[in-house]
Image (cartoon, rainbow, N blue to C red; front, side, top):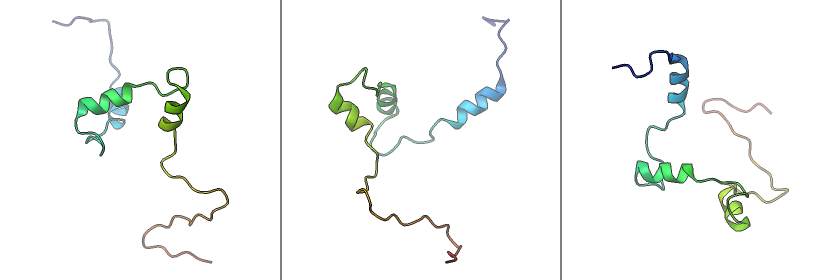
Amino acid sequence: PDKKPHVIVNPGRAKKAGLLKVAQVPYPFTSRGEYERYMARPVGKEWNDATATKKLTRPAVAVRPGAAIEPLRKKGRKFRG
């Protein structure tokens, strides 16, 4: 029943690939198929027009240039200053 007896599967690679999978479907998506279709879409300017590329590659958080950003702090640790 083994279709390709000369092929050796590296189990280490299978473990690494498993780390890249998401456990649940992210928020805006309602099904696994919808999420997979979205991830399969090309993003670059070679495939999309300028407006779509700008929208798809826009950062999630926008901060005005020159605005002060508070540093991240770990819970339970105090900042020494």
